[in-house]
Image (tube, rainbow, N blue to C red; front, side, top):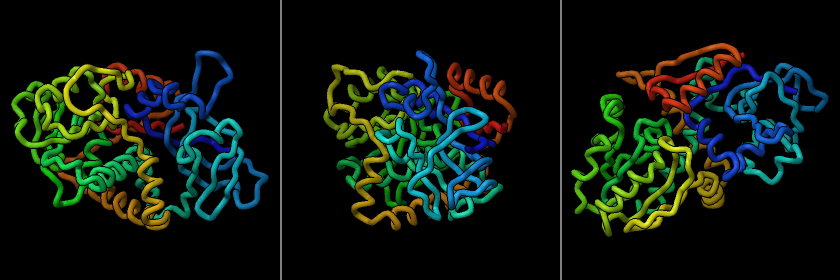
Length: 330
């Protein structure tokens, strides 16, 4: 049994809830009560009871947990790096979410970076693999990259990971976030959503959609027409709906799923090399977060379940402030 100590809350957790049935997020921590679910979060927990060799009381682990004080697990595939939860109901679910990392063996872990790790690691793996996916596919022949919800952590993490010789990137964001996004310095230009029709439609483009906004998608497709070469659905920061069918010109939106690219790269490079490359990228990203001017993130640390409930309500209702990172301690 582990005791949950601290975890992050972002709009990604709202996505888990919104897509809980469609993508099986509700299945990881069932409540046994119809109509109720445990929202998954990423954070840190300590073992408080164990009768399993290799897992000692007091050890600290990072992973995917329910919002709860304690959590009973069935560890299997125990290694120096960590273990997988082998609970029967989790066996058919995406294994990446069942893996728990021993902090003492995590090459990137630092105690004073726990907040960054909880906030960014579950998103940054998507960013890292999405950047790799785009480059692995030659950006589908496009010569400009259009990114919606560019203020989201996954979006600017992807921009950070793209190679220096990447195609020009255009960040789309709300008017209230244009200054913040411009200050990140990881996009070549920034436009608010009202300026979509002013973008150069003569340059072949790829659309990487972190917003999930159907109306915005339609405008992008109508504006670029045949010069839109690929529509990559990577998130839903602006909606709680899954991809819906639309009668729009150009390519059909294709959902991006990081575990698919991880599986491909495990086959291409081997698991150890994937881990090495990812660790190097994450370490560089965390170092940048510590020194960036202006700061990319201000931490908001609160305590207890009531605080978590208030943060969740604000994220679901207002979308949150991209410059604020929420950490809950128990």
